[in-house]
Image (cartoon, rainbow, N blue to C red; front, side, top):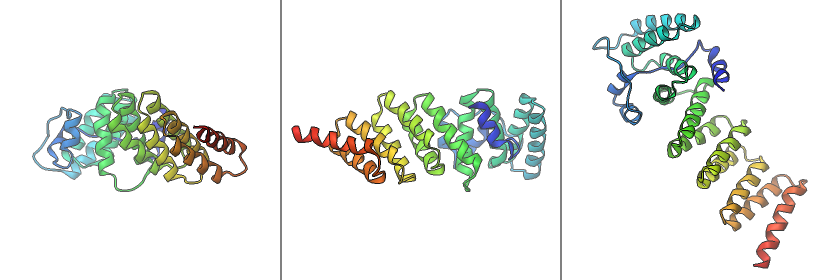
Length: 242
């Protein structure tokens, strides 16, 4: 996954970055406080866009040479000069992720997601990656927010929906798995298998009437599937015997 993420950012000159100077920005203080902030000293009292660009270009040069510690230093200086420099934030976060310094990457990803106003490939990757990192840390109340957004941003990615839902369900959070499949259905309404998967978890949780509704929805979306039709008939028969 590490190399796949890097490849997705390559066309945008090796992106992702930020620093504790961001904690001085009131718009991000709550995010950075949650992640314990970042340790860096502001190089000057005011924002200097020209200096930030210079440090950014130097960071890119070091990054392309795989001199990552020097690149980190330059990107941090760029962000010190301009705390809202989204490209530098992307680059720094990307390097931390590549170096598996995930606790340092997470606040940068969060900051970049906050700053990015356009739906871009780096934004989609950042949202998906931060959700995954939070899931790996079992910070499920946080990860679910990013996971639902990742589904909305990349509705064609069926596999991520099942991975997310299975992770939550296997961790005893069926409620979040249900939310994931509902988000998948909202993003791709014609995907009958999402309805079937939702029904399976609802049935597992004893929500049988809702499960039957989900199975019926799957059967309606794919009327030629005997599999979905059998799910409906079997559950209807079971309910009739109760």
